[in-house]
Figure 1 (cartoon, one colour):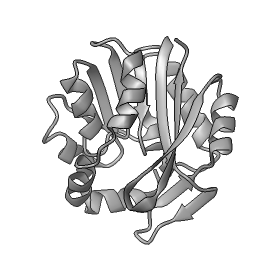
Figure 2 (cartoon, helix red, strand yellow; figure 1 turned 90 degrees about the horizontal axis):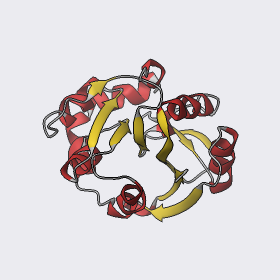
Figure 3 (spheres, one colour; figure 1 turned 60 degrees about the vertical axis):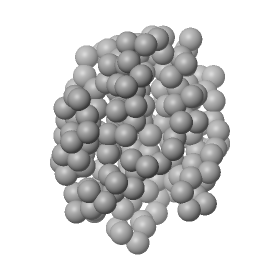
Figure 4 (tube, helix red, strand yellow; figure 1 turned 120 degrees about the vertical axis):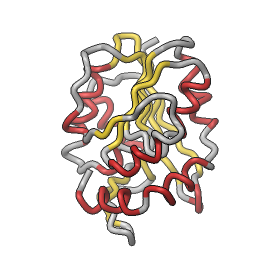
Length: 193
């Protein structure tokens, strides 16, 4: 994550956590969780407010969660029964094939286009052979900076499909959904099951 985006999340952690906790992403859970047995281990990449980790834990899953912002992690840790860790993408150092599912909801979108395949390949090494992977980006084409100074890598369906396939994820499902304020999100779901 770039410095300006990290500074935004550190400075606005409480407000950001409150806003994102209320978002209904059950349609994404419904796509992801049926492929994982209860008790499976999920890596929540860029866990933000802890909303998704908490949902997974409440459904009976084991979760490891991290985010690059210390202040966001502090917010997440106020609601989670586990301790989320402060970690940047390039600091990830998990055991190979240790997770049944990887959930990267609105987190990889702060990478540069040349960083994205590196991190996606790295995440693949942490996923079990029969694992499940999910990630999401805002619909668009290329890098942009918002009014708060946050950097976003927006993706088209075709562009995201191409990146994932180049990283060894074949047979992926790419779909869009509406988000807050009329934004459209591009999502990837992949399972080798």
